[in-house]
Image (cartoon, rainbow, N blue to C red; front, side, top):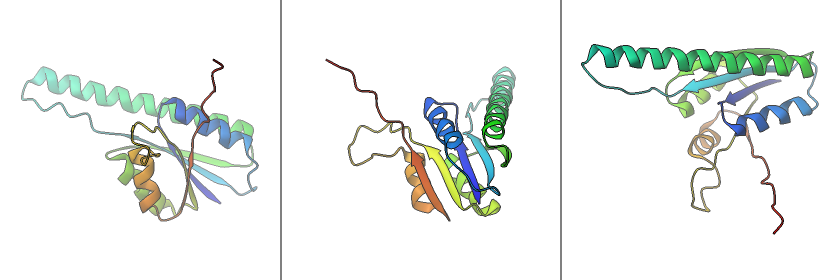
Length: 151
């Protein structure tokens, strides 16, 4: 079974990883962690701004690689029979996750949901909604249950 894990550095991904490591997986399960950095557009002809933009892109990629490596180790520790790889991509998150699933021939995509929308009919975030509508395989969107506060 090939599981593509769409990862970002939000608390939603923390819940996603906790859920993955608590599940029982078949012996031959392979995981591919994909993190996508959206381009950081700083259009300018000023060389110092361009240099700053390059530095921001470099640091974001490094941060994503460290995050993916940390998650890879966590999955390997809790699911020792699994094969785990990761890839950091750049571009539109929806397109990159879908393309990664197609290229790798994933059986399932696991991802978290941000739910940044305030409209009730938009229960998924824009990325998870777009991926679930266009993916070549099953998509499971994992959402942490809200903690109820006693009044």
